[in-house]
Every structure is written in structure tokens, then in C-alpha cells.
Image 1 (cartoon, rainbow, N blue to C red):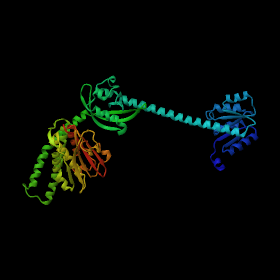
Image 2 (image 1 turned 60 degrees about the vertical axis):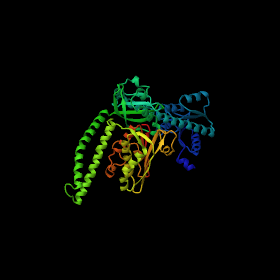
Image 3 (image 1 turned 120 degrees about the horizontal axis):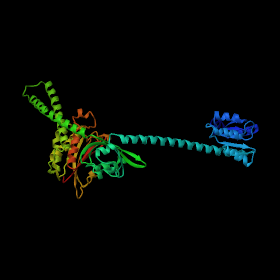
Image 4 (image 1 turned 90 degrees about the vertical axis):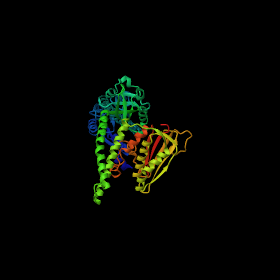
Length: 513
């Protein structure tokens, strides 16, 4: 234990006393208690030692030649290096005025000789503890001051970026989606004044047709986390509709959960994109039709008999031309739907017939890939565009079959539901007494979809794996078209999946259209 104390002393104590007997006594006592002790007999020597290596505490005699204890203490307190060292006076002078003078020059305590060893130890430990706590407090204060300084600088930078950013930026409360502040770019794009926006919600200002869903996304930020590049139709004060990409980040503002919204106006980009896609698609369709006609003539043998190698090359050309035509048709379909140029021709149709028709259309593909199709039809009438719904169901079945292994099964079924917020568990419930919706499910045993892809697979040109477009022949537009068709029926489409175990797509449609 003694060796450990010598290696790791409890504290470094400097004793300044011109009496050797006192020095020896104090040194022996403190060393035995685990302290490191330095002893000097002159005040000037003690000052040099304290400045060279500042001790944790100083025991100081008053009556000394050349320089007395009061003068030593004054010199210690005058130096930045030694000012904070606690000084305990030990003196035979017991007069009150002597003690007052000791405290006046900066001493923290005064012990009268002859002293009790236990008293000296107790006072030393007490003042060392106080000093340690002071140092901790100073360190915490310095850290706090640094944090305040850093935060102030960060807030100043944020304020500069917020005010001068060319992108519209807004801050809204999470609880009510109520605007707390917006920058000049936001006011310019919306045509509002600051007073018209602050304190109001997007719904109150009628900033778009999906403001309720927009507010819900803000309120769910603590659970869902940040949102990035969500497309949103933004209505200005004058009624002009702009397309914006909006990103939402959860922030803390003086203890209040808030949403930081950053927008990017892509109205012109969308217009040019749509015009370009439409132009290119139309220009491609005519030569592709001619190419397919020529390939059909070759395949029918009307232009001569092909060698086996020629037949193989012809098959490759036909397959890729058909794929290109599907891509062009999908692009045209999607663009016409998004621009409102395709109208749903709704009429009474039977769900059972839709499911059976879609299954029969995909049966050849399923047989070729050795996948078993299982249909559970539901006889109930629906007000919808049957051709578009069959297009949706065949697309979903095609995906389920393509991403299944030989011997796997794919199910398509329908049940009635009374709620538009059906989840996977509710989809298994029995029929309700007053159904308002039909829920169609397409379930497979395939490879599944990673969780980070579940939200983006319904976007244009998005696929789970980039190689799918080559290996599976997909265009990356099928699910986007399905979503658009379902939405135009006032329905909802979503997916749940477990990687390696399969996926289930849900299509929820109102019975009355």
C-alpha cells in the first residue's frame, strides 16, 4: 500500500517553514498519508519552487527571515501561475489581527502552533477537496462557454444561410405543422408576405391539394425520420401550381420539435422533361413499328429461309425490339396519366373476372418459369376501369413470377374491407358487415425487397437491383404506372416484404369509385 501511495501521491504539498523540526514532522506525517512533500526553509526558495512546479497546496509559516509568510502569500497571489494554489498558514501567532492579515493576503486557513496532526490532516483534505471541486467547476464552465460560443457561431451561420439561400426554406412546428419562420425565397415563390405566412399552416394557406398528407408527414417525423426529395404540387397565392422537391429534417428549436423544410422549384425542369420524353417516345414508336414488321416477315419465312444461326440472331433482335416498344409504351402511358390526358373509363365490373383474366394472361409465363399461380377470386361488383385494373394486376403478377424460383407459388386474392387504412393483419380479417373497399393481394415466395427500397420502387425507373433491367427485362416503370392507375381510382397501393422470404403487394380500391 505504501509503495502504491508513493507511486501515485494523493497530492503535491509544498511546506515553507524556517524551523527544521516542523518541516521534518510535517513531511513525515504527510508522506505517511500518501502525499508528495517538498520542504523549504526560505520564502524566496518556496516562491521559485511554486513557480517552477505549482503544488496542489502550500503550508506556510508566518515568521521567517528575509521574507515573511504574508509577503510570500502576496507574491503567490500576484502571479497567474500560482494565484489559485490554496495557502494554509501555520504559525505560533494566535492573535486575531494576525489571522485577519493572513486571510487578507489570500490565505484559505490558519492553524495555530502547537498543532494537532489530525487537525492539520483534516484541514488539508478539506481544502484539497474544495480545490478539486473548484477545478472541476472551472473546467465545466470553460466547456460550457465553448459550447455556447460554438452554438452561437453555428446559429449565426444558419441564420445567414437561411436568409440568403436561393432555395425556399421554412421552419414549422411538428405538432401542428404551423410555420414559425420562412426565408425570402419562400415568400417569392409563394407570393406571400411574411405576416401572411407566420403562424399559419399549409392547409390554412391552401399551398397545395395534398396539404393534409403533407402535414401528416411532418407530424410523423419523430417516428419516420427525415424525408428527402418528396415531389409536391405547390399552389402560390395567385393560384399558379408549381412542382417542387421538398426535403424535411427534424430539428430542436429551444426545446420545441420542429421541421426544417427545404424546397427546390423543379417546375420548368418537369415541363422540359415531360416534353422531351413525349417527343422522343413518339419519334421512336414509328421506326420501331416498322422494325417489328420487318422482323415478323423474316420470322415467317416470307423473305427466305434463315440458317439456325440467323434464326438465333432474329430471336435476339425480336426480343430486344419488343422490350424497347414496351419501354416506349410505358413512358407514353405514364406521361399521359400524369398530365391527365388518359381518362379512366369506369363501369361496373366483377372482381372475380378481373382476377381470373389477369391470371390467365400470365399463365403462360408462369408455366415457362415453373411457378404455380393460385387465384382466390371474390365475386363482388366494382365501379372501375377494368382494362386499367387488369393492366395493374398483370404487371404485379408479372413481377411476382419473374422474381420467383422454379417451384415457388404466387397467390392473387381479394377480400372486402370497411377501412381505407388496412394493414397486413387487417387484410386477413373476415368480411365486415358494411364493406366500402376491396383489398387485392398479390403474394410471392421470391427473393423479397430490401427495406431501404420499399419506398422508392413505385418511382419511375427505380428497380431493386440495377441488373434487373438486363436480366429480367423490366423497364422500371411498371410499378409507377400501377400506382398512378390505383390513385386515379382513389385507391392505395403499397408493399410489405421480408428479404429472402417474399413480398406482398396490396391494392385497396373503393367499391363505388
